[in-house]
Length: 73
Image 1 (cartoon, rainbow, N blue to C red):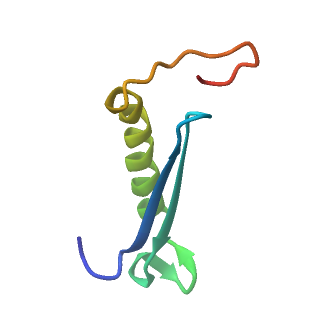
Image 2 (cartoon, one colour):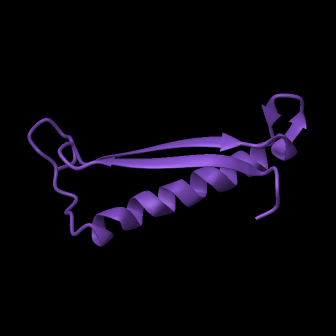
């Protein structure tokens, strides 16, 4: 990956709630204007994270069942 695109990324998974959290810090090289992230770069990050979330349950042997409240279990 080129320098200045992705500065930091933290992925967390709550095993009790089965919720996946991701914090991403993008670098200045993905900005079209100062402090405004380029839409294509943002779309690529979101697509990659969505793919990871879809694969994560299989990696952790989790099912996609929902409880009575409609939340994933």
